[in-house]
Image (cartoon, rainbow, N blue to C red):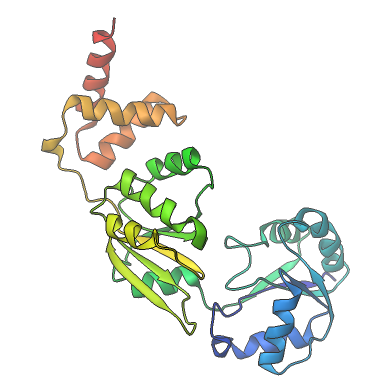
Length: 282
């Protein structure tokens, strides 16, 4: 018989948010794989429990090397509980490789649902919550960051990002540049902790505020793009959108169809604009 992999959500701030089952799983585990073993020890003290099994580190630096070891433990019948510093494992945290290895070996996988910075920030942001997408961390390099933001510039769903405090000002400035300074957003800082703060406003104002320096765990929520007015888009606008998608790797046929969907302009009209542009080039 194979073992069980338990993905255990941990509090994003207040330890009182820990579900009762988290304590039970940590006490019953054969192996606890923790992103930071010191944080795990602090959490178990706060929960007033003694971990039942051995504790191993499992973080970005050793995830590739340690995954096969843990997969063998699971194949041998062990109950392995995976925890990260805050929130759910594998969501912008270590865990995906181990889940994939467990799936490959037919190991049972379950989860202890816990607090989520993504959903908590979305809920308190005051922005639309009916449709959203999670973008994780943006690239650190400015050029790559801008390119990623341009890919999301026409996304109509609410966008959720994680960001490090020392990069927040640069990220908000880049968002203002790409999305427009008037686009509404919310910066959620230290959620559920003592110094929790939610700062709401247009991106240009938030960028100016962040330039003074911000500390803590950060989640940024940004309003999605407004639906375009088909009557306000000329042929050059349609061609530019198609060309941007082609540069990103889409075939022309798919790019034309996508632009037609996102703009509300008939596909034939987008096609004609692209063909006319092609014939007009020297």
